[in-house]
Image 1 (tube, helix red, strand yellow):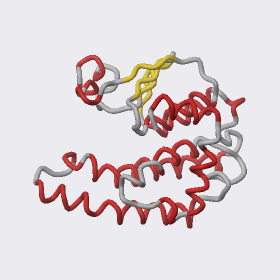
Image 2: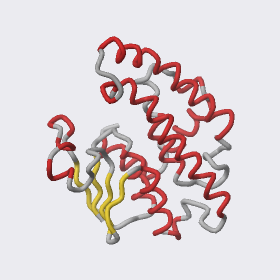
Image 3: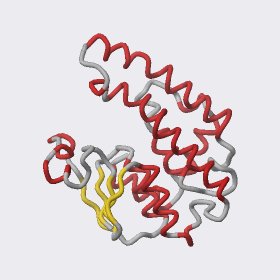
Length: 205
């Protein structure tokens, strides 16, 4: 497999999962400072011009929830998802879909406001709203989704590297992770894992 990523992006989640399942893969780092993700070569891989992208024997996968689930299903011995229980697996996907469709988008209003507006005052208004929306997202996660010590309870899953990746954005979004003790504890616990330590070094986090 070939994994396309850019440092310190949401690709961190999939990168951790690749290490957790001990996948046989190579990497290709994209240079966002030169907008390499919008170049013709990468657009042939992912027309969205975003990361991550994973080239597999079966084809190309994009979107973090899809890549995470693929890695869990293609490496069942790693036990990163409750593959034998359709409801519990759906709950994992429910959580990851929330991170993808709601939390990541809330964060992106600070750093990618031009996706939704051209007017500078509108972009500034979106940026000012981010601490409130991100705090609300993590309040909901802490109170209604997070079971502890891992997202789904006692079993580490593909939801954990995803939550970890996004929780690392809170400081930049002017939210103190310590407002959510269970999430702060999860972040610290994740950093103790060998796969996470390796990927954080690669991404310079």
